[in-house]
Amino acid sequence: MSDHTLQFTLNGQPQTVSAPANRLLLHLLRDDLGFTGTKEGCSVGVCGACSVLVDGVLVSACLLPAVFADGAEITTVEGLAPDDEHLSPLQESFIRHGGFQCGICTPGQLIAATALLNEQPKPSQAQVREWMMGNLCRCTGYYQIVDSILAAANA
Image 1 (tube, rainbow, N blue to C red):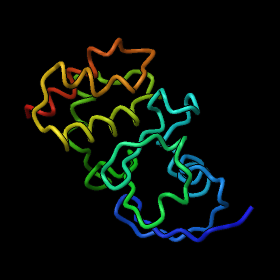
Image 2: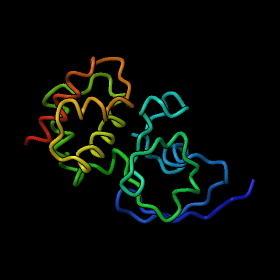
Image 3: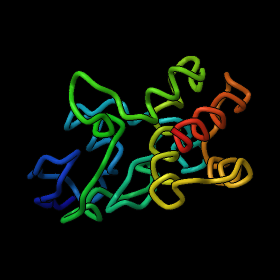
Image 4: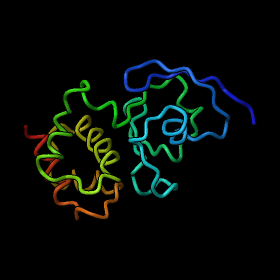
């Protein structure tokens, strides 16, 4: 398998890494770079646990070959907070409104919600429900997730 040198920006920081052609972005982020907030859930792109932003677009990192991220700007859950001492308004809202339980799906939920709010800053409840349909949660029943996103949008 051929190795490729990849250059991209990860959470605002330039990265240069070598990866085999078959390396998935999920494994590059978690195993090679230590960004373990991106979770592996279903490994087939339907649960949303591995959601990241690539050039502002919501993608499943478990499906994307890492070589496709060459030259891109990637944002993981670790890149949402403005600094090490503060959380983003959306992260704060998830805490305040109980939008997380066990935490397995929370990083993907936060990334997907960020993508939604970037595209539609004041979504309706129906828009939030439709957008978040690709992120599965076994704990909350979704009400608190929707409430958290709406509260952040209205803050």
